[in-house]
Length: 306
Ligand code: GLU
Image 1: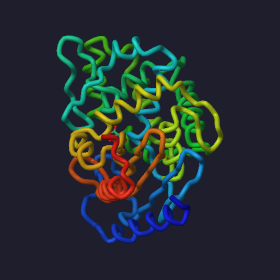
Image 2: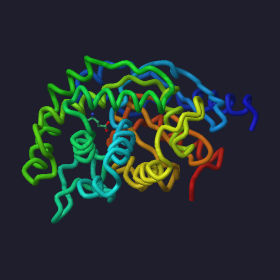
Image 3: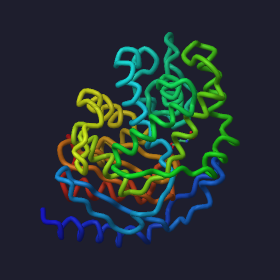
């Protein structure tokens, strides 16, 4: 497809869905409810490095749960697949992002895409303290996005102040020996990892690097091993959209991850990375315009992996 055709398609979808105002801003992290509900950006990066953007593709928002696939990759590359599997499963939950359910017998979180799993990842990632871990996480995200990322201290402070549900889960996992060390220190890494600032342009490049087996198509840098990428993309497909995963799989068919800030990243293996940002969310915490745009892109460009 020609550059003009990709650009025209994104512009058409942006025009069609910008008047959609269904959904609500999240309130459980108070700072996230202060964004402009009209924000709407779409970016698409092909594996030959061509990128297309429309709307608010340069607007920053916090990465939130879209950081989880990358945390999973870091932990697997540092500790090996087996060590990570011992502590976190790979089963979808059918439950919300903050489910308190752990797997029977092992007490592992069901998967690395729900909060409980990502909190264990924050525990597993190597580093003497949260500062060292955050340096590693930032460097990895920047290698994936090929850009320098900022940090939103207000969202981080807001989430930390209100994060008692995550705290409760962390203590439950500490009780079962799934977490080790100090809960507040572990949560510090988790909350900070969720507070890096990204644009759809950054996220599309990150998704394209996943689609390209770990080689960033903009820099040609090999960021992670193909085997790690396979594992990440697999859990994105089965678990990345929480309790919307089945419908997403059926209507979009692209491995993806949503974040409560209103972003979605989609990985089309061997073809492209896509990102949409619009902060109005449905009851599963997924961007409403994001779902529509992905459904239509999947249909029009025949992107479903099935
Ligand atoms: N930082 C958010 C939380 O822990 C992530 C949730 C999400 O983006 O789905 O609640």
